[in-house]
Length: 129
Image (cartoon, rainbow, N blue to C red; front, top):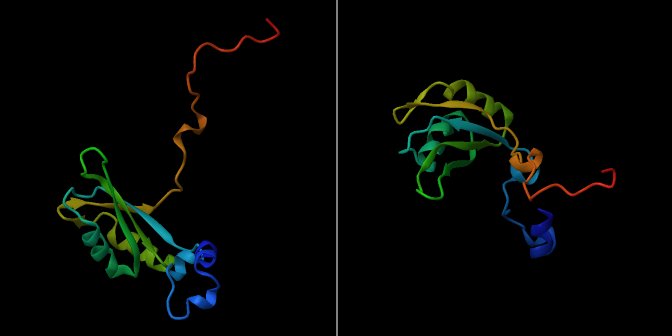
């Protein structure tokens, strides 16, 4: 929100609306991982399926960059923890577009390369040798 405030000006420049959802501006959003999705499931369909359990802030299906096809999983974000809990209990193990889906809290994104060394040739000689 601070970046938007710097870009637009003061907060009084936004009297009737906000460009960012109140839940997201506070950093309080509950993201769920949804696995086992059909390749025919759309983001709109995913959002509609989960909207029975609360207000869906965002529904995102992860796409393969090469084939432009679903990778079979996605994420649904809710504004409150109660809604997210209801969605987990209500949707986990249920069928969506002919496939059984699995729902759980999303884990924080991790950088896979953190612990892996990158090969760059032979090691440097040390002064001990």
